[in-house]
Image 1 (tube, rainbow, N blue to C red):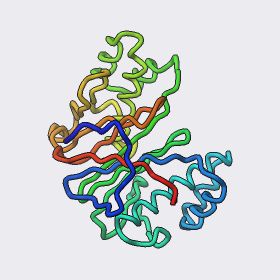
Image 2: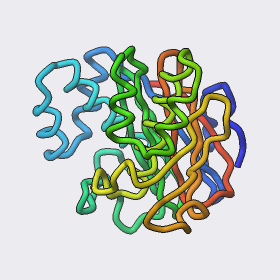
Image 3: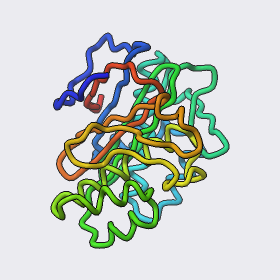
Image 4: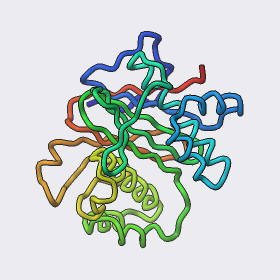
Length: 246
């Protein structure tokens, strides 16, 4: 495992994902209309229908861009046409590519997206825009584990909001990596959350071996955002790439 490079780099032309690597792409979702239309043409019918369910045009555009860029990124690794990729979904809605060892996960929030990829090991990523919310302690008491609530309440007041979003993104990344959605109660496992402390999965009530199976990593996607990913196993190298529109 390596610490995250503070820079999101332009990927090399001969891009490769090795078995001991995790790649995370940062993607801006604010693109001109011509680019949105180009990406929209890559989507399957079910993705187009999902886009239309969003009430606001901006949200429809952001979904379209995120899924279109995801297809571009996957196609680049697999050397396949983005429009020809066919997603399958598990019973909780997590997408995957049949007969491929390439595993991936996508998260987007307020104009930014992250795509995380690995080979042969499950991964989950979560991205959140930091919002001023006076109720975050009440939200923590409802959803977090007693251990996490105690740590959060013990933090200096000026660090509590950061601690809350650290906890939220790490928990979301883990349940997305597991691929079981909110069928996993958020209060039944614990993660580290104090600013400056190592990012870790600390405890899983239903299976003590989960801590040794999964690792967590915080990400710094940009000012005003908090993010993390969860990945199976502990030995990997991190590469962070910046998506550039072709």
